[in-house]
Length: 136
Image (cartoon, rainbow, N blue to C red; front, side, top):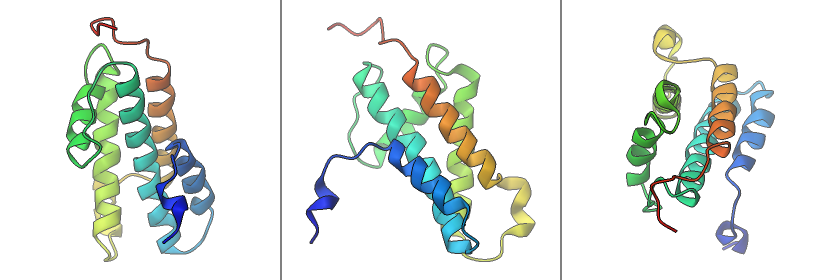
């Protein structure tokens, strides 16, 4: 077992990996890029929201719902927070359905959109001020 699996990780590195994989021609690489784009945005947001006092993470699957709800908060990302939900739905479609899903394109988003949206979510959450309602 590799110790590297247990070292601290900056989730933004997933976005770097996603960008690299998006240039590959294989479907598996592109689908993995979509998955990593979502996780870059989700994990970065979770960690930043926790550091800034907006959430108390569980560091498990429950955090998906908590982060999605907090991103939509008017004091966090407001309406743009819905893009996190769109990003997750696109990721779910691409990750879980191994069939040809070209007929479902109206429900999915382009890989380029996923990468850009993940980057924007991270940037906007990074720029948030600490939660003024949190006592330090």
